[in-house]
Length: 109
Length: 337
Image (cartoon, rainbow over all chains, first blue to last red; front, side, top):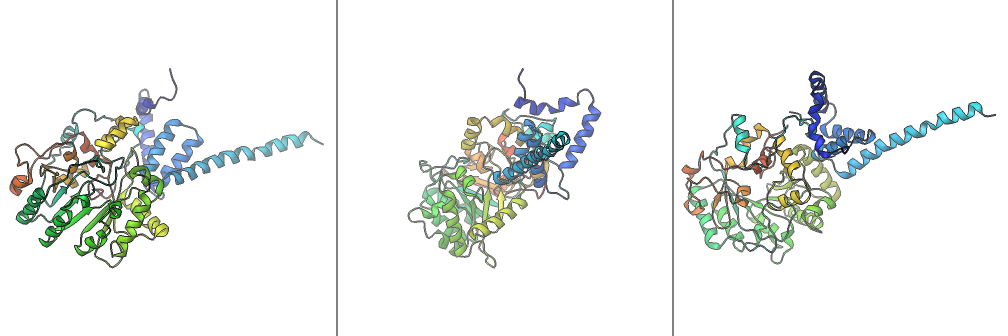
């Protein structure tokens, strides 16, 4: 058995097999989140694209790469969104360096 | 309607079957019948100075199929007899047909509104540099493909160097009054996705094009039409080579929008090929799917009474015109999703 098969993208509804009411609630929430609102569909697609990389979900990366293109974004814009996600991730690691400083300082003279 | 992402739609169909479009229409209680013919769209040949990767005509410099003067005269005869409001001339690069300028002149003398699907770069072919003046003198509406406002994407689809030539051609059209404020000369652009995905909302990408073309290159235009790539000929070859055919067809079927059906171009258009044969649209023409067999088959036999309310011939490719905001030679057919 392989992991992360492309065909599995289309099998997502199977997640609703055992508790369909929970899946339906998720679907309603998910679709409502995507609608044009205070943010445009394009902005939301870029957010989804960035988050997909931050959580490293290959299904989401694939789906939101397509969604960004179909919302009119180009690779320059998508790459900037990717760098934003990566910079936050990198910064989140770096800021934890202060925990290390605190830990070291606590036992140091 | 919120377009669900592919993996979240439980109702997925794949359209590789011969024709499930009619079934789809029936399931929505829709019927695809034409109304009055408003536009005669004439493909004057497959010869082109470019060989774009998405071309549904498979046009290129190597093609020899081209409308003869005799058939052009039949088209002019039909324009004179039936007074179609609009003549939409396409190809290939239609300007490479030796009878192109004669057709435009005669049609304009009859008062017909003339649209030319002009690829911009043909302006730099021998003997074609006066095209902007010719278009202006005949008050032709110019519709030109420019898949993106950046060089890399445009050249990836239309060939190396096409973007820079296209910008130069657009500036020349602007210089004679096309697409500029206060002028009645209309210059519309066409956006095709550079790959196996659907176009973005037309209004939003039009705003991007207007802003970017003006600030980067000083180019202006009237409207941007978004057109979906059709899974036909060269684009279908690309889909197959790249392993995208099933996924793309799934996308088209999944994005079926019943509200797009009313605005489909086949309802108000008849398409003529380089031999004079009739079709419901240019895509059917490339698939050699002629008008319904009970109808006259050539422009020389055209009869408006028989064509009004005709049934339209369909295939799986028709999902390309009903996906999302819909697609036609005039761009999206519904305002928003």
